[in-house]
Image (cartoon, rainbow over the protein chains, first blue to last red):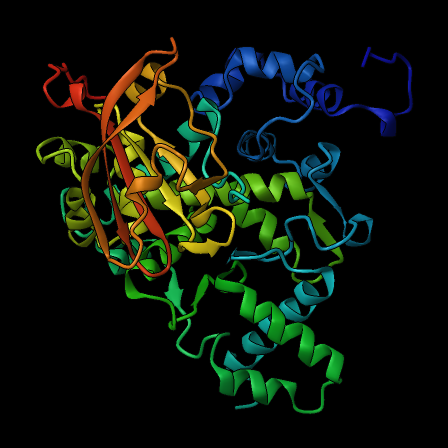
Amino acid sequence: MAKKSAEPEVKLTLGQYLASIREDRDLSQRDVEKATNKVVSNAYLSQIENGLIKKPNPNILHALSELYAISYEDLMERAGYIVPTRSRSGGEQRHGRVATFAGHNLTDEEEAELVQFLGYLRSRKKPGGQS
Amino acid sequence: MAKADDSSLDPEELRAVQSAARRALDRASAWGIYPTPTSVILEAASLKIAPASAFDPRRITEYLLGKAESAAVALKSAIAKVFGIYDAGEQLIHIDDSVHKSKQNFLKLHEAGHHELPSHRSAFRLFHDCEKTLDPAISDLFEREANNFARFVLFQGDGYASMAADHKLELKTPMKLASKFGASVYASCREFARTHHRACAVYILEPVTYCEKTGARAVVRRIEASPAYLRQFRRPDETEITLDHSLGRVLPVGRKMTRPTTVSITDRNGQAHECVAEAFDTTFNVLLLVYPVKALTAVTVMIRSQ
């Protein structure tokens, strides 16, 4: 996608957003490479910022969120990695709210029940929870 | 149908996973200790195995009292589908202890991978209280990354490959190394074929069934091949092995093992090669190792990747 100039801030692409934050933090792409211990190479960052890589690996986004002190969740959403549960269709796709090792994918309903059950187990464990 | 890809990562992704796995082994001072001391790895990561696990039927029943029937059905089917769960909020791992011990090691390390990769841990923490989810493509990637983490820690980088290089190229070797590394025979055979310096491939087949037309047949679950095998032949892509396939003779029908048997495999240039194939029926699946005879006498210079 070509750069859109003079768009309102909400329309910034992931790359434009990351470039603007980096400039705000007064860092060069090389500074970022150094500060992240080469986790984010200057070449890779340049491609992200120019929109050549639209979906960078989450590890890279995490490293950038730490360095820039911005929300990882927001970066994951901008990259399209975190979506509302209801936008998914059917049980054929991999579930994505709980970290599991599963033989089969969970349906949304199954996963929702599992999330609740884990919450219940957590509450039972706490000193204040009923025993 | 063959199982979906559960392990391939691009080099960048692999590097990130391996450096997290290396850190975990460093912290636990676990290099060179076989099998990898899983409990020390978890302890060094401040991870605990849930004592009252999500798989405990009593816990499930307690929780379901007063719940609608539909919720009960959904939870029970969810529990039946999963073997391990990582609770990011609690630094807690739930393991289905009805699965075989050797597989539990892999499960624990897989869940530890979700914990040790900060991009996973932070993401999964978000979903306790909101209706958001990972996009399916990225949750697939996270699963493959966690598998690679577990594989690296369990087999200690190229520790497995170096040890395998000192043993004979035969099916007994990965079976023996499985207990050395605290891995399942299945995981050990996959690692064996994936990392061997000589040409070899392991077919993992579903148990043999019988069809009136073709007789014995086994559906391919996965195939792993060594880089040398891929160079000489190509990535095998059979979906089933029937008796009229060159490997059909090796299917262990009515027996546990098939002794090394000569078979013919055609290489990339259409040239037939004399190969040896042998098989073992684990009752859960059939492991079939195949390698060209020439590889047995070939001189290979090994270059360590680390």
